[in-house]
View (cartoon, helix red, strand yellow):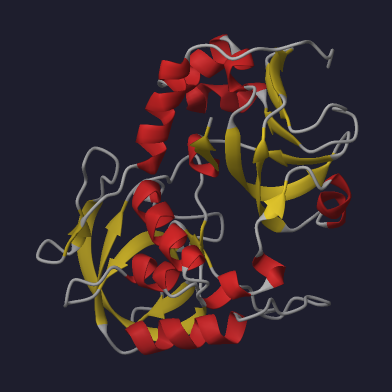
Length: 284
């Protein structure tokens, strides 16, 4: 990708992004669902009893169905996978979900795709007293926000809870293993290849090249950290303010971003972003 001198424009669009991503969503216990506020729409309502806990983000209902807690990723256990090393606090995360839900009746609601490729239900779970299980796990620092293009409901509310836990250094946020990576530390990020990370830094440049959006966090795009949005995923960013950024990526230069995803290595460390829930605008 050719390096060009970029400058900042359309500050109003960036402000709109900050308001969109930074907004807090209140929780209404009586309704046992988050306040939708236009960003947290859930559908359906069924109840079941929790019969078993697999790990910190997966459980089994009394009818045998598995539920993957939509919007979260807990520290992982091997679960029979060979040569898989347990992530720090994985046992504690499982124990917390067990204490929170085992043997209790929960209400399942859906905010997008209802099953994953393993046929697990992708549901938001609520206890009879109104507690939202996803939010409870994230507030304890025993899960991170983790969304997909077809399942993004309630991400803003969960990001707010994650920020609270991170500021208080609860659970995983007290450990270096889960620390937010510096986008300028290219060598560290290359060593993180194949892991899920939160990466934070100031964008140096951005450009649309052959219908792929690149956001560069260093002067040498061949070696520095990059965020890549492929042509097949650009359609997920068609709403404002993202459409303005796609129309003129140069306005992203100078923006401080926090990006989450699996770290790959292609012309340096990169995260392939598929939807807006993976990016937070921190300041400009």
